[in-house]
Length: 114
Length: 111
Image 1: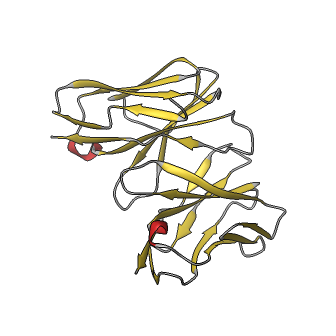
Image 2: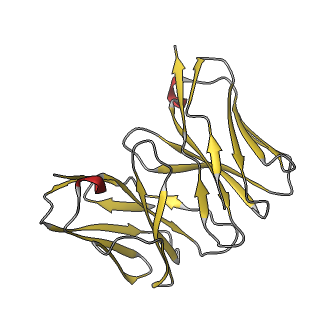
């Protein structure tokens, strides 16, 4: 595997379910990101991790809970979601948080909340 | 605050040039980026330009930066049907280290 991978690629869940999204990067990067991409809206940055430490939480509701056990893996735990949370969730990584922040993206997980 | 604006849609004929425009607000941006997103895929970095440059060329892609007007453009020469995608402009904020994305321009290439 190369680059940034995400699983599952598609997920359908009910509002009472608990599920997790997984992201793995094989690039040796130190920073990882979760973004939400909704129709007709700009990409929204949700969380940032740098060297496994969370450095940014963009006022994301607590029903989204990130976890970064090491620099290569990032999870997004989902609990009691709402239909408006249906979106494409993209993971990205970069070498670090320096000012040349070239980010590499995974293919995304298409989430549908019923 | 930081904001990036793009037109939403552009349609061109195969073989023509495409020009996608972007404006941004953060004058302290050090790098500006163009990403491409094909259907069902994540974002792929196409090219970037450092803020002290006016132009960067990479094969069929030409990036122009007007720092005074905070205007960035991406020109695709000899546009092909495989170039049909959504193109995102992003500015790298030196204040926050974040990337701020525009809403994306959908490029439609007609045969």
